[in-house]
Length: 236
Image 1 (tube, rainbow, N blue to C red):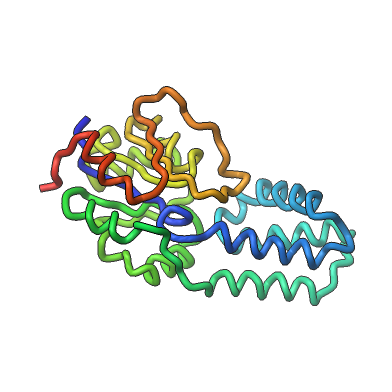
Image 2: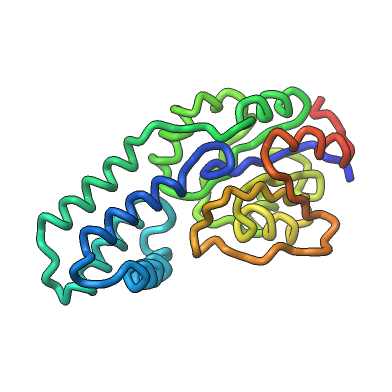
C-alpha cells in the first residue's frame, strides 16, 4: 500500500461536538419532563431526526427543528411558546459555542501535513462547519477541505481522486464507523477508527472485523506511528 493522502473527519475527531448535543438534549428532556419520560423523549427525538435527515441534513439546525417537532408531538400541539423559544436559544448557543480541540489534534495534523496531502472531510451545515474550522486554527494545515451532504464510497472516491491519487492510496480518520471508516474501506482505502466515547445513535455501526484495511487507535497521538507502519510515499 502506497499512502499519499490522509483525510480527517472534524466533529468528535478533531474537536468536541457530541458533548454539546447531549447537554442540549438533557435540557430538552427537562423542559418536557411533565409530558414524557427521558427514554421516551429520546426515542421520539431519534425517530424525528431520522425522518428529517433528508430534509434538513446533518447538524445543529436540523437537530433543533427535530426537537421542536418532537415537542409538538408529545404535547399534542400544546407546547408553550416559551419552551420553543428556549429550544431555539439552545440551538443558537450551540452555534456560538467555542471550539475545543481534542488531545493531539493539532500536533498530529501538523506532523502529517509535512509529508502527506491532508484533507478535512466533514458533513453537516456549511456555515457551521466553516465557522468551526476557522475557530479551530487548523485551517491552514489542510491541503483541501470538503463539506459534503453524505459520506459514501462514491463521495470518498471523488474526493481522493480530486485531491490525491485515488482512494486506494488514501486513508480516512474519524470517530464514526458508519461515515468515516466503512465507506472509505468500501472505496478501496484505509479506514482508521478513533472512538470518541459519545456517538450519535444514527452513526452507530459494527466494526468491519477482519478487514486488513481497518485500523483502530485510542487517540490521534498514535496515528503517525500507524501511518509509518503502513508504508509511505511522500507527497513531493
